[in-house]
Amino acid sequence: MVKIVEVKNVTKDFGGDEIITRALRGVDLDLTAGEFTSMAGPSGSGKTTLLNIIGGLDRPTSGTVSIEGKEIHQLSAGQLSRLRRDRIGFIFQSYNLIPVLTAYENAEYVLMIQNVEKEERRERVLRVLKEVGLEGLEHRFPRELSGGQQQRVAIARAIAPEPALILADEPTANVDSETAGSLMDLLRRLNEEKGMTFLFSTHDQAVMRRAGRLIRLQDGRIIEDNLQTGNR
Amino acid sequence: MIFRVAWRSIWRNRRRTLITAASIALGLIIAIFFIAMAEGVYEQIVNDGVRMQAGHITLENPDYQMAPAIDLRIGDVENIRKYIKKIEAVEEAKLLIWGQGVANSGAGAVGVSIMGVEPAVEIKNSPLARDIVAGSYLAEDDDRKVVLGEHLAKELKLGLGNKIVITTNNARGELVEELCRVKGIFRTGSDEIDGYFIQIPLNFARKVFGLQADEATQLGVILKRPQDQPMVMEEIKSALANKNIEVLPWQQILPEVASYIRIDRVSNWVFQGLLFVIILFTILNTLLMSVMEREREFAVLLALGTPIRKLKGQLFLESVFIGCLGCFAGLTLGGLAAFVLQIRGLDLAFLMPEGVTISGFAMSTTVHALVTPPVFLWTGGIVLGAMLLLSLLIMRRIKKISLAETLR
Image (cartoon, rainbow over all chains, first blue to last red):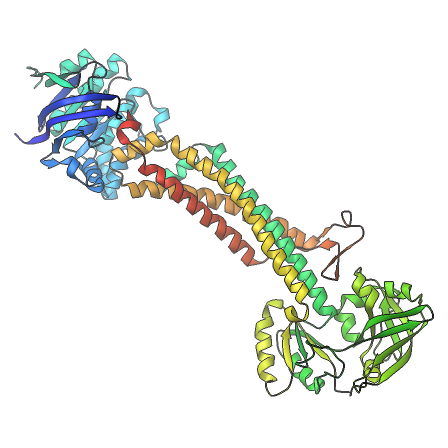
């Protein structure tokens, strides 16, 4: 199996000279292509920090992270930016859509900065918006959409460039349980149909149960890493 | 997309954008209005000064400036005038004979500046000929007639038709006395001119000062457009290269006026500049606020892989849009206000009932602005340039964004 993510002995410290908070304490983690992995743990266990480091949004204090064999923290800022643009999709807890862009334009954004041709962009954006169930809502601005619909736009934005890895930080935290269930079904379907690798953090037991692999973090360490039969 | 995001972003907080653009517009309106008004005043001073005296360009004996004396005259003036009047940019060429003397009446004697003029030319050009408050201005065939200033008339207790004796030295150095009569009294509002100037017809002046028919102390060239001065000077200089005649700009003939304009213009621009710097700080604060409150959004865009130069480009465009909006409003409204002031003028008599003199020249209390394209280009250019500088300052903020912290 192709390794998409390889995390080796990663630590992360926050704080200054006097008070240091150790968010990650030697994390090792491999993700192979097409995995649908959930990361659980109490607040402060290091889930978001690990996602940020894997996504190249933050640097580890020590250890290495490789995406598709490239050690990402050795890359220049420009190379890292291109890696995020082309190979990693992000889904945030609070959607983080661009408020001045419509659903269509938000989904189109990354394709634009990738310089994808206009016709191809249009075809891909309409397809992903249909896949996430937003057909007919393309021209609505985020403020005109419900929380669940906004998160679907965020998912469409993440999958439109067809990245190898999608990192989602509590993607269902801001929606009701029914919407959370349908969003997870959507992510799972995209994972199966497109073969994208998903790594998401969550507190929600129902969400955890849908993952093919469940990792539990506590105090900056992985304390459990199990494949969940029936899901993968 | 960056263009679209920038344009829509500035309208996200419509009130803030409008206030920022309005600040720019207000700065421009004030700058254009006051600069155009000052330029109008300068033009009026220069126009009145050169038309009353020796033109935008003066031809005279090379030694006359150092020690003005009646024997330092120039000859062949009619031929020279004929040549000069053929130049397209020239409106008029006037002859002057300018000497010093003493004016005597039964009430006393006063040192005066005696100006021999061509009445027909002066009536068309000189504001002095229009400032007659008693009697009438000179005519071509007047002999032994003078017009003099109101203060001088008062001092010598002279009325219309009264006798006045002019005493002076002629070109041969001989003392001459001429009995004349007062034909008109002028009031320009300038103490210097109204208390010191006497005008007599040119032909009579030739007789008084002992000059030949084709001689004068100055030949003044009045231009249709003052900005043609260097070009016309060059043309005249090359035509008169073999003659002992100096060709001087009005700035050398009226240096105190030129200095006044230079100093006033610089101080006006500095004042407007300082005012605008204050406004720019307010704008900088607003732009910075708009960036700081969108840091999370910028962090998302960076996380999605947006190159930092594209985000900088977005901020640059936002500044340009706001700058252009402000410039458009400011240049339009400021230009309109100045244009109305140029056409209608603004009578400041209620502020200056005693009148106003600048560098010895009486000014009309009605001020007309002068709107010129360079004022728009300079003020608009400076504002847009300043906005671009501000955008460079706020761009630095983008580099400081910590993705993980901002997205937390």
